[in-house]
Length: 373
View 1 (cartoon, rainbow, N blue to C red):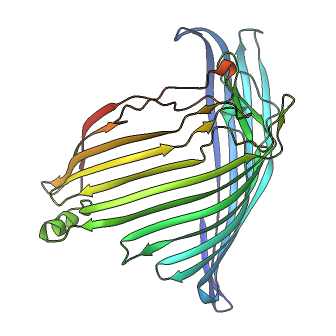
View 2 (tube, rainbow, N blue to C red; view 1 turned 120 degrees about the vertical axis):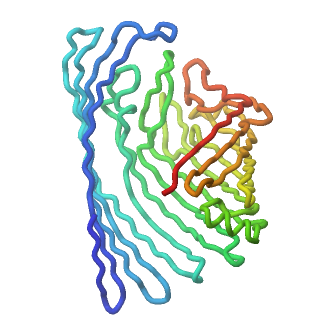
View 3 (spheres, helix red, strand yellow; view 1 turned 45 degrees about the vertical axis):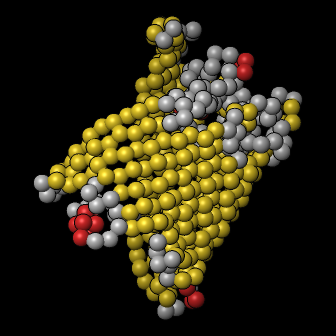
C-alpha cells in the first residue's frame, strides 16, 4: 500500500492506493456416501483460482468539519477447473475455465463531525460479488456454467460516537441496498445445494448497537487490576439490533412469480444483548440473550422456520499472576432453557427437508494461559 499526504487549497488531502493478487490450488475429490463412509471415487478435480484487485482512495478535509472520501477498485477473478477423473465417463479429462468480466467498484462518502465525540456520515457505493468456488462447482461435482456475479448499489446514512461523559457508545445506520443477479439456493432430492441467479432484490434495513457502563468500580484494587492489563471493573450493558426489510424485486422461476416476496432465509428482526460484569479480583460474569424472528424457507414464502430466543452465560476468573502469566479459568452454559429450534436451514429443499435441529442445552469449561512479556 502507498500513502501520500499533501495540501490542496490550504486543506489536507490524503491519497492511498494498493493492490493484491492471490492464486489458489485445491485438489477436490467427491466419493459415494455409504451411510457416512466414503465409497468409490466419483470425481477428482483440480481447481485453480486467480484473483486480484487494485484500488485508490482520496480523503479531503472540507470546511465546517466535513470529510469527503472518494475511491474505486478494479477487480478480476478466474476459475480454472480440470477434471482429472470422472467415474461415469472415464477418463473424464477436460478443462473448464470461467473468467468474470473485470469490474470497477466506485465509492463516495461524506462525514460530518457534529461534536468532538459524535459524527454522522453518508455514502454511496457500487460493487460486485462473484460466485464462490462452492457455487460454481457444487458438492455433486456438477459445473454451474451460467451463474453470474451479483452486482449492487448501496446507499447508507449513519451516526456513531460517545455521550454522557463517554460512558455510552453508539453506532447506528440505515441503508438501501439494491442487488441484481441475486444468487439463491435450493436443495435437490440428494440434499445437494444448487445455486442460481434470481433477478434482483431490494434490501433495506436498520442496524444499531449501543453499550454503556451502568457502574464502574473505583479504588486501589481496580486501578491495580487495570495496570496489570485486566478488563476494566464494573457492570457494562450492550445490545445490537437489526431490522431487515428484504424483498425480491422482479423474480420468476419455474413458471412462478415470486416478485415482492420476502427474501428466502432472511430474518426480519435479530437481537443480541448482554451484561459484562467484572471486578477487581478478576471474577467475571457474561450473561447473553439472542433472538431471531421467523424466516421464510421457500421463495414462495409458504414455509417458515419459527423464531426463537436463546440464553447463555459464561463465568470465570481472569488475572495476571507472577507478573507475566495470564490465566483465564472459565465455564459456561449455552441454550440454558434447552430451547428446540432449527439452525442452518436448507432453503427451497426438496421434499420439505428444510430443518436442521440446533444443539440443546450444553456446557463447557476450560483454562487459558498465556505469557506476557
